[in-house]
Picture (cartoon, rainbow, N blue to C red):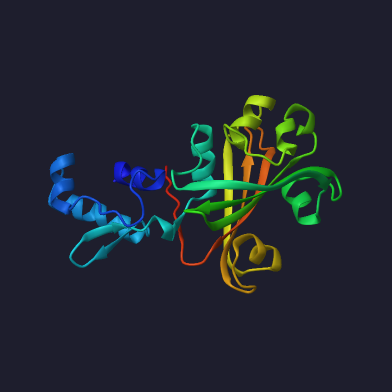
Length: 231
């Protein structure tokens, strides 16, 4: 399943394309029909494919949205966006930290912080809008954070290379909400539309916050989180 999922998430398999049949998957990967059926079932449950009469299983990547963890791991690996995605940087500036941001970063309210705002487009349609917050202390060592332009290697990788701050852990929160005026303008949706609102933290090995992120995505998209359980 990992191979098919990776092809969908990277854009190799695009929306509307048909994936291999259960029998073809079983033959290609030398697994049983029962296992291949489960693979397709999991992809359907995650909103990555749907069954279409007469065609089989069709990619519906537009119904899924990458988690903060996925974005971070892709960035650190050198790839952030799929082939049909791109980001527009809406702004990058120094400003006094709002109270909720200060609380998230563990600093006094009003302390100078860096704010980077972006909108992600999928097939040229806005799918999510996000804001990354950093300590203002990074302005000197990572000056590109204050430029309203894409950072070639991705923001997390750039921060690591520029400052030596290495991500070691993360925390994500998610809730259903309705679109504010800012959300409405960024995503091109009516005020009060249902959205998925998220916030995430990236920590270094000492437990200090490297980045606090806030994002919203349009309704009817699945956010999938995969994790291991150790005892």
